[in-house]
Length: 301
Image (cartoon, rainbow, N blue to C red; front, side, top):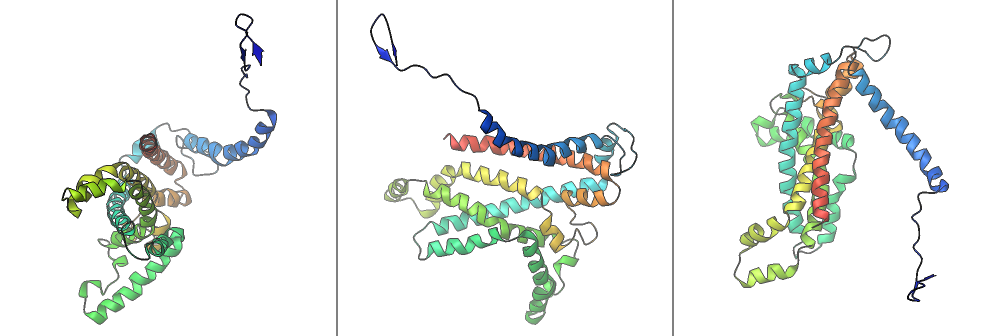
């Protein structure tokens, strides 16, 4: 306590701000070192080698932006980006429609809704590669056998062998695994809406559809935006599900950008695919910044 000599007031002394002490820095050091060695250093090295002709080992030469120039004119790379973005867009739409409908149903007055929530969340905790192998068996054996027994001609052949339909299996499996996480976000948004709003609308004669259109969807706009951005960013990184289902086939019809990058490392295209990964990384960073902006906006509302 300090005393003001003019007024005699006793006021608490101001504490000077202290920075992190040595103990805190000591505990932080292992994490910083591990992060730097495992992520930062390899990332910087990868960016550097994207400007070379390195095959991953041995001698290399500096080639400048040659890899990047070739990248934007390579039909295989452009096809992989087109396929990946297309899959991401379709899956985002499907996931959010199904997740929102399930969330609305599981927050309504139905019996055993807590048990149903637990059931619908199960796909989220399973490994993507295991799910893909299970669905691979279903699409390759079970579905064609059932289609033959029931006389459904267009399903008697596995869609995994059709270059025009194989992408459908990827969308189905990816959506099946991604719906639970989106549904949980929507449930959190729905339970935060005051029940008095719906009661007042019901007293005014609003139908269920008009309440959904005029109350639920506008108040859920922030949650929808967050789910769309998070989902789109995650689906751009599709790899394990594609490997387990089609392995990029038939041919290269379902080869994603992530698969192109990993396969390129084994085929002597190290520097070229590092340039591809840098471009892909910049796209992911842009989407992450959009997600961060949306998340902050929702947190402050």
